Amino acid sequence: MIPFDFEYYRPESVEEAVRLYQELETAGKAPVWYGGGSELISMARVGNRRFGAVIDIKSIPECRTLGFDGERLNLGAALTLDELSASHKFPLLGQTAARIADHTIQRRITLGGNLASTIIYREAVLPLLLSDAELTTAGPGGLKKYAIRDIFRERLQLPKGELLVSAAVAREFIEAPYFHIKKTKNEKIDYPLITTDALIAGGNLRIAFSGLAAYPLRDVAVESILNDQRLSLEERAEHAAQFLSGVYLDDMNGSSSYRRFVLKNTVVNILESIKDAEMPCIR
Amino acid sequence: MYTLKDKTIAALRVNGLEREAVIRPGDILLDTLRDGLGLTGAKPGCLNGDCGACTVLVDGLPVKSCLMLTAEVIGHEITTVEGILNTPIQQAFIDMFAFQCGYCTSGFLMVCYALSQLNPKPSDADIDHWLESNICRCTSYEEIGNAIRAAIGT
Image 1 (cartoon, chains in turn brown, green):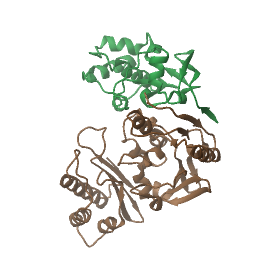
Image 2 (tube, helix red, strand yellow):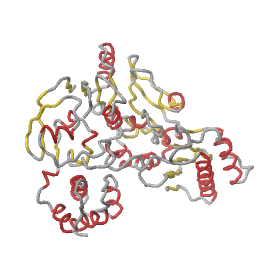
Image 3 (cartoon, rainbow over the protein chains, first blue to last red):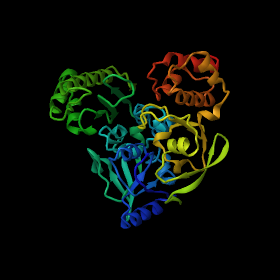
Image 4 (tube, rainbow over the protein chains, first blue to last red):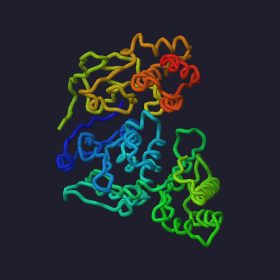
């Protein structure tokens, strides 16, 4: 049981939702956006989160969009991980989503909820970081578009009152060869020791990680090292692992030295697969 | 816009019947089913979405009722373990001894029932994927897998 009362609203348009948020905020209701609700309910139940109103965005059409508009795939923030996976529209995102939590919960966790999660892993953002996704938000000033690198810096940094409406990804990234490798400490369903997503764009490797650091990580400097043809594959992996030496998590899932070891081996495997032209590779 | 501000009497469709329950906007579905409607088949376990003992179906698909607000299911079809009496999957659980203490059983039954309804010929990979959502501390996993295979005739 959630030990406090709050109000429940389910608007049917972006404009209605944004206006409602402002009204509830002005009234001191401390509203929160509500997608699947799994994190909010869990946190509220144990007293880690308190709010006076939830605004359920699942009836807003723009938040439920899933389809191509010309050469761009639009993904609504209220799509569930299961819908992303089952649609096969963006295979790398689908593979990543299918390894977050379990099959039943994947029908509740939404794309927006995963990106905005307080849990550090936020694995669904990895394909969006790799594909230079554009995020659309809505606020009192209307719709805004952000390059994901400008608004997702370690975590989603939405201005208060802005609603994440959707993400857009160019077709060239969706059709690019890709890798998804999730390694956990033990169980198949678990938070990642390291989740690695990668794709080949313009002949170069792009790579991003969850679980490696205290936030989802894509670093173009690491990619430059990994794409340096002057180095052997082993040297590239070692240099990249060395470059990241200040960020490794050290926790019950794995020590920082173990994560470094796993990272290096994962990267070598990816580079060898590319060299052997075994793309796309799903693991 | 649908709005629920205060405690109210909500009309819910559960196991094919129209039911009424007093709900707060912040009530989770599991509490409404158990405390409001007396349907105690769905079990409180972890209350955190991990164990699956509270699994019910909403519009035919499994959800963990500890992580869903009752306000979200108004207008939708809810099925609990009390609503799948005398189905082949229940008999298969008995025949295959697919439980020990039984606490997780209703959750597993709901997942197996939903899978059998949606996919009459699931692959072993499908079965494993769906069953990964639930935990049995008595480790009856082998027997539970056998039960669903028996129920679907593979």
